[in-house]
Length: 500
Image (cartoon, rainbow, N blue to C red; front, side, top):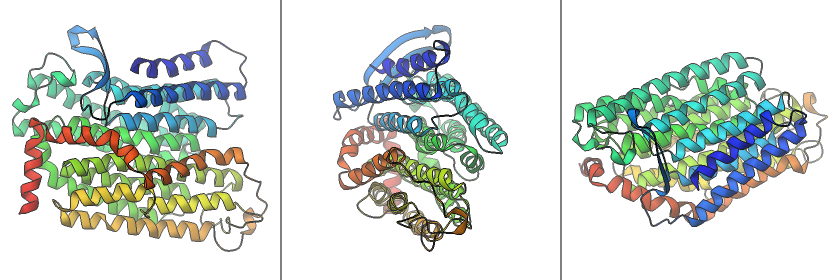
């Protein structure tokens, strides 16, 4: 069942790129949307047959591949990866639907989008360290071209910077993976074949540092973040949706799966430093967002701050805090996708994202009242207003982290307040007041353009009112992950630190 998730977008990409040479841009878009929708619906089918009470990997597939390297085609899904698979499928459909119908080089563009979907899917379901690394590197290639070809004026610089940073990230990750396998004496890279409990504390810390740097670049965490604002500003709207909504989650997923889970002793030793690192990312990202005049750059810096909450919760490594980290990943994926989508619509209709130029877009007669209303909902969700998924995620993160790291948690709790500040600046400047003369003759936003934003807004509210629909998949897996014998050191360490 999991191989189908890979085969559908790969075959769709091959069909678009090689077979019908006379495909028009609109037809290419329709074919890509059908392929992505099939892959997403198949993920829904998998989720309907997923047993939340089963904490081990489900729907596993195993096939020996290169025995000399210990590499196997080993797939599986659990409560950690399933919500991310659904998020990837949904946002890929939205990205394709939101793409320009008359985009240049459409066959290449939609081929890359489907390849990107397959690469991210493969990374989330890989149960072999080397197989994960291959998928992790594969997604780099289509994303580089998507920014470099269809980006803004400085797209070459942004794409090259992204490529260099991600390549360095891969070097650190591969080095740590090789060290884990060789030093533990494992005969393969399969996750369930690794015995990291035998590794000394010093060895675990050394290997974990490579994982932290590698995935810290991907998340990204301060000061490894500088590629992200440039990539977001230059990328087109659909690519920004995928970059913020899905690709950043590969970093946090990697920290949980390969850092906290595989090297628990080293994780517990470094946990206080990780909590401080989270505080720095949260406050720095929010502070930089306040200083921005570009709407897209403001949302980009907000992502840096919000991903810091995931690191804070992961540092505590208790069932409740790790559950909060997963909720925050899904919450940020939906909210950031909505915000980038709305900013993209504003830019498309007005030709500007500058807060010094835009004003009065909420005007009911000549502005964008529906887009403005959805933006109000999006910024409220990002600021953690009750009734939306952002509040639930942040509440679980703070509730799970406060008992162990009260000072760091209180400092991170400043983040939602700062989020309200910079998004209030955005709303006040761009959407309230009289419609500015520079953008007074706005073309109408069709309902077809509004549909993706409405879908995301509905999901944000639904999961805010009924979060158990997400939690029920994840909670058993997270409880088992942090309560396994190899992870009990982490749990006992943070509990004793909290008591003291």
